[in-house]
Length: 60
Length: 465
Image (cartoon, rainbow over all chains, first blue to last red; front, side, top):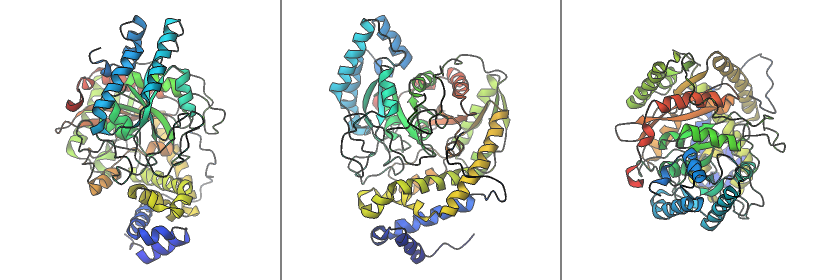
């Protein structure tokens, strides 16, 4: 279990992404959003050295 | 016509053609119910009664003249309000929308009109098909007819609620992480997310391009197959649309299912989301019902659900943020808090992470292809938890985390939510069946066999009889 990213760093990243207004008005939402998506990304496997190109057009 | 509002599409059609029911009388009855009952439900954002009645008269006139457009002829179909209907603004249940009326119908609405169906109102949803239930928007969230204090599921909440309350016989939903199957499950109706590309999406506001599906919601399985038959088909202007011929998706309904194989992903709700007791018992009862019908049910492990669910969610958030970035940067206060938070999450997914998700998706799709290639269908829960209170934010978040639906948005396989009885509080239970790409007819065959062996559809919400 890694340490959650500090709120100050999350809000700095949000500003870099153009969300300065949200960072001012809704900082708690952005911190929850960033920590939540980070938890999801930790579950995503890395396919590793497999020749898989991300599909431009996903065909089932 | 007593209780005509609970009739199936198939039965309405029979009565239209025998003269026992007139389209105008039927549509008038539904309009009266919406006016009387929807105040406490909130399923409709808009209903143009005059247009619906004019369409009903046109449908009746055509039948009189021998023009029969098929099973959807004269059938009212509710439209989730991210789907364009010419002449109406598409609001997405949000302040953030183009206020101008749509200049053309969405592909699916045009298909419905060609099939003789009547667009019947714009239905409530979770804001932009992601953020809800929300109490900080101009329109309130739709409620669950089985318990007005309970979560109806989302994002196609108005579609599920209106069907369960007997306000219409059919509705369109969209599904990017479970948004058809969730409200179908919590409202006790049938909802199918088709194979990716099976139903054209032109004219539908996107949430996440590579995960979005449009699909049918109805009270029973046969009706669902009929509605899919009307909306499926190739759209040459939609690059993700499958180039498939029209298909009769109800063709195998009624055939025995003895000998069919059902893979049961029991571990998803026992190991991965720790399902609540009645949900787990309901799933085992459904598996046993398929065994009694002669299917071979075998437990399998598709791998941890979180791998599928999280990959789907990260792609969804990334694509949704790409769509909403300009508005979120310029006027975040125009969004409801729930949508703003969920969509903003995509700002924290790097390009490298997004591409890792797409590569992971390819491996997970291959894994699911192998499972669904070896079995006729996969049986799993829709969620590990029953509907919570609609106004309990923490419980709503837990409910979202207990969802087991996003796997099939990620892999593109068709999946249907099937009503499976009621829990001790009288709230609907439901399960999911998924199958190989382009095999929706097989899903309908299995789901209809289960449905025919039970009588869940006879029960109606007490406040809406």
